[in-house]
Length: 483
Image 1 (tube, rainbow, N blue to C red):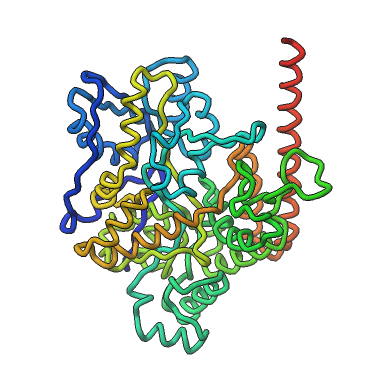
Image 2 (image 1 turned 60 degrees about the horizontal axis):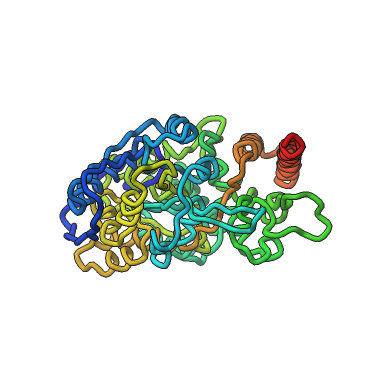
């Protein structure tokens, strides 16, 4: 079998191909000579990216040296914060992900369109973690830039889905196409899973993550739930990603009669119930999570072993699948039903204590340039955030069809990456409540109902947020009275 994917911080990247690589020119900029830029980041994909881009940047900036301080993913934020909170200038550029964006925001330089070409950036991927919204002032600012994108999509084994016999058998039985690009709703994904398992083609159906480690199970739920939320204007109120900071797990507006300073949870509505019903059906075609939990990390191996015909995961898993000696022609990518997607991201920002702010800004401009973005995909298999880079790559006649398939699937998914998870100070508390409830239900789905499960989670969400807002109000009042 064969599979491909790219994304999590702990996943290293591999060279996708060299035979089709083209030479592109990179932007040149004049800067002050004899300067050293220090970048703090985490090990894995950012290291590989910086290893590629730094020599290119130094070549166009004579006298400039770029140094990288990389830490394990579990430690990098604490190391960055230690330096930033002390007001030290040790780091010029720092790294963050969506869940840590608000933590680092007070210590970085706000960016604007003079630093990055916002019109060329796929905005849902950038704004999910790179743009910080201030509910008090109703304003937002760009805190950092994403050098690549990694959205949740479908990874599939083309040896199954391009098989004419299987295509005809599936059509005869379900009167639908087997091609993942034609899956326009989630019931089709359930039908595909049933087909492969009932015909004993694979041991499992389309794989979904049901492991609580790293929020994998929550990502699976949101990837399904987002389809129903985005298509329910009563819930989203016309904002397909929900209220900034709260995302699609909450209403996209404050309903009449709602008295709390946060929007009500939306997961216990019909959208959430439908999503959990679909998720339970998909997991029923996998081993019970009490026996084997499918995760971000082990899905590549399961796909390569032919355990399932396809999987729902982040595009960054492509590299992990290719690293298992899989032929790239055997791996296909397709958008999720309805094209919407859940975003993932890594962001680079300029420290407000940097002594080389202008040079750091130029580095961010450099890595966002279409030419560098093209090289990044060709050499590392990381997907661009630059629209011009996609256009150039997709029109490149020397690129094989399978690579153009990857690019098109990821571009569509990134442009529709509006399934945002909560990004507020109590995000981890909310995530733990949801993940625990989901796992308990999937392990024993006959003990309760999806509605009861999600009602319980929604009640926990309200309790967590009430406690948070009460503590915030109390702290603010205490500060005001003592000043």
